[in-house]
Image 1 (cartoon, rainbow, N blue to C red):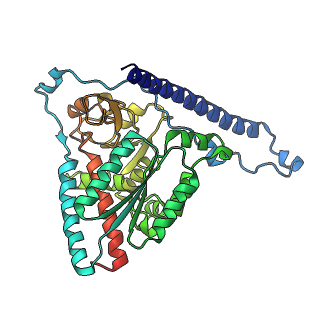
Image 2: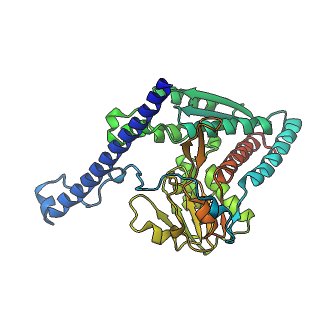
Length: 396
């Protein structure tokens, strides 16, 4: 018992230390950006005549503007009063992503079986997991299980936090050349401290996420994170080979529940490359009017409360309260936050960004966590892997 207590205390101390460091870096980068602009503006309009190397524009490099996404939230996860659950207030429709995902997975399994009969091949998925992030481990575990049930071959490579970039790159290149692998997935995000090092100094870079994703074969990028797939998603008239699984699953839920997207106001909470950015692009492609709320947004509650559709992917439990929501809004909760729970099978359980019980009494429809977007993400991964194999083998 003393060992368990010390381990728990150590984790808490490390989390607090990391938050403190991230805040200092965020403030430091913000000050540096302001100093860059301020110093440029204090120079006279003819300064360039005196110094041939002076910049032409005042705008700083975009990379210098990147700061860690740290949400200020005073709310911690809590169990809502039972009186709420027994209330007579009309509750929102619960969007059952689990049942829809099961239907899709069943159809994929049937098609995989048909492919095996006619072509003699089955789709293959390779998953590369770096570190021991608990939610990532859960996702990977569920993905491997889903592949087995659908008849899709799966290969898992697990690498420690201390691995070198070379180790990840070697795995990617190996699977690029493997004809039995039709999809390659590098589980994101990478461990936080790796990204922290990346954001502080390129000289201390441990893993270059952009470089790794760029090395993925475009035809096997079933997660849709390759720059060309993301670029084609952003441009009208272009069709990416793959759409990112989570955003693709969100849109599928909206369509299957008859939610009108065209012309509606949509707010995406969070701007990560994994969810926030691609879902905002995808909603635009479906003709929604899209706003993005992030950690630096002023009055996020006001902006979000005007939305017909809210997609939240901040990773902060209880961030979205009832006052953030417009009555009748549709809420898609992508956030997955591991909360310690000794009674759970793995010692923790997942909760979302949205105060679910509050949202039920304001929104017209809302996804639960778990059982909402998560299962759809896996179903879309199976679809993308199957589509990749279809293209390679000319199967229809």
